[in-house]
Image (cartoon, rainbow, N blue to C red; front, side, top):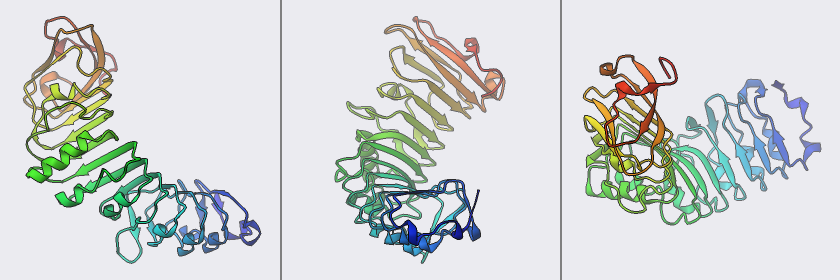
Length: 327
């Protein structure tokens, strides 16, 4: 749907509370600056629209509580969002450009409850501990030092309930780095963790009580450091485990009471991997296994249903294929 400024009488719409223009095509890809005249606005959504630049007048909305900028294109933002003191829910794309070249400031948004999604490359993650009302956040951390990594999941965010972290090209091999990673894994708010091309000391931190107690999804991609999958089986809420080009044992053996909630296990690019087995501890359990890039098992990509039961080993070549030749 095309949107023209003449379609809305902004002056006569001062008492408008909700302005949703999702999927709309704006002239020149710009949101009209007159949107700042909607001073009673509580909810503004530009999701899936073609807005490429946000006007500075956006900070003239003193009562705005929800701002959804998950547009379908890259967007330029004025560095004024930190001035919107009543903001409770902020939705962004990681691919943003801040006008002026600085990182997006968020400090002072003491009522912000939802922050989804920001990147350390474009947003000042040092502001996260100042967001004292934050309950849910989705953050991408890329190629930053240990001091900056330690800022994420600070104890000052006492209201935090859900954290979705994506970490790319970070070094956890130092003593401080190991402490930061351990702190993340011990956080009860951690729900999802993706680590790509990260360096760990010798291995992923070993399991200890209360570690990853609410973690539902773990994805490791080309990380340096040995992986003990048996430890992951102790994560009580883990539902999805994806391992892509990481170092692990030739045979994955775990107890049948491991992974109490696991639904999907995906293994990619393991040249040395030989098979999978189980050791009996309790009743049988079933989950789905997908693998790719392992020619020792035939097809390039397959999904299986795996039954972990009895004391004998159950190997991939005897598993029941249920989803055809590929995922």
